[in-house]
Length: 396
Image (cartoon, rainbow, N blue to C red; front, side, top):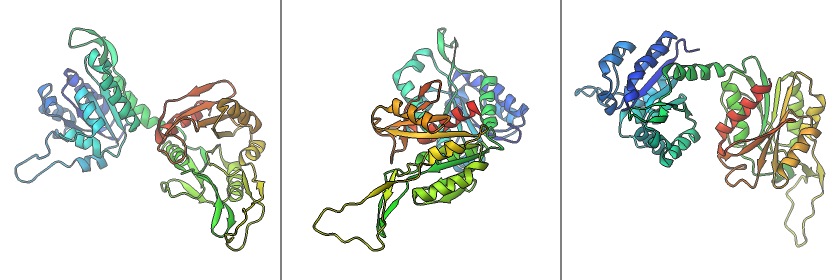
């Protein structure tokens, strides 16, 4: 999968920099094109001449290549690359990446990178184990970087422990596996519901909820990245979605119900992420209801249950995933939903997890199937989407 890929290899000031030659060789053997960006301290460990001879490209280290106004554009590199790998990555560079300290060409390239970034730390065991390093790694993971954990082994200090940069073949394989994963859903049709629904009271008012649609859109984008043909049935929300996704905009639960029933029979997977209103007004006023002295009473009736109705028509070759947002007895309620609505697994969200769910960029989930429950750490919704689709792929 690396044939024709454009790779930026970032090298920092570590004794493990000599292994970057083997990384370059592995990428080129697999048909990739490699551009090296090295920090000033990195050049103390390996020469640009060696790296340039292997890549057949000038090595980039400084912002200004000549004194005639020629300069290296970190923005252009960020747009050019299919992936960036920083190997070795020192504790200093990790900290700069985590906090956006753009004081060299490598860090500015990282901050401009549009492609996925892989980070292979290399340092002594005490530096790697230090809470500041671990916090920086966690921050970078939250940003969406892929951390290639160091191995156990003999270190430059003479000590032995975790901190040794992973071997070049393993680093290149991690990148290759990532691109293989990008096509893991090729040929699959995935239908996803997202966002809230609005149930009209009169021409200017509605019953709704606080859903932003961020989780559903993140799921749609992740499935599209992996090669799936995605249909997104979106309730009223301000978020956009990529052109690779077929989008059907709806407003009410009834409209979402009909759109889901039109699209699910031809889908391989249904992911019901929308926060669908459970009730709607029995009567919708044709004119704005005026404010009066007495309390306003609105009679409500249940909306159609999209998850249950799709569970009834689900075929043996289809997968149906539901979401459960709970405030109490979370797992018990989610397991009940799993059984009652014939779902393959339920993604449980709890309102008790502060800073997650509605209107937030982060989420914390538990995936529940008929055999087990699996709880994930709190992270950005784009990363949560990865976890959910990984769970989907495990049962496809």
